Length: 208
Image (cartoon, rainbow, N blue to C red):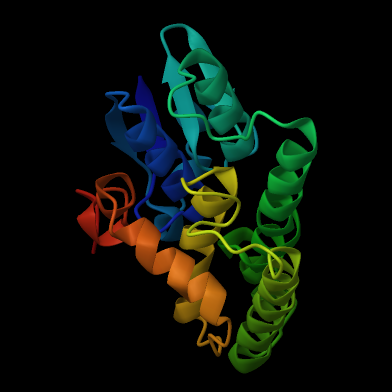
């Protein structure tokens, strides 16, 4: 497997965690987002969106981090990233999608660059990102408020935790007030696991 990513890409971070949890070996190909390397013609031939990550598996090419995680969970079912109960699976997916569909897309580099191109001041752009993150993480905190488990939805990490930890990295980058004690406690438990620690941005060969 060849994972196309970038150390600061939170979507790539999700896939690194999933691969590590599954114990799947992979190689890296790095694309520097701030230098626009994701827009190179050879990469766009793999991923027409020009986004990271992309996972090459032989002749197959997978894009979108949640789709990649779903694939890994089906092909390498142990340990599972989703609960066995259908209702619990829906809860985990809903939590994950708050981050992957509602927070991350509106505060990623591509959107922030568009705001810059429209002439917005940098302070206003950072406020945009912080607001998106704060609103989304507050919703995530509410979604698991009744849970009394070490991780978001149980005694082991799921897709929800895989999405949460990278988003908290972004939250710190934008100066968000981290007021969610339960989310932070879950993050600490995750980062105590090798699969999460080895996937962290600072541990990647392309880290700056």
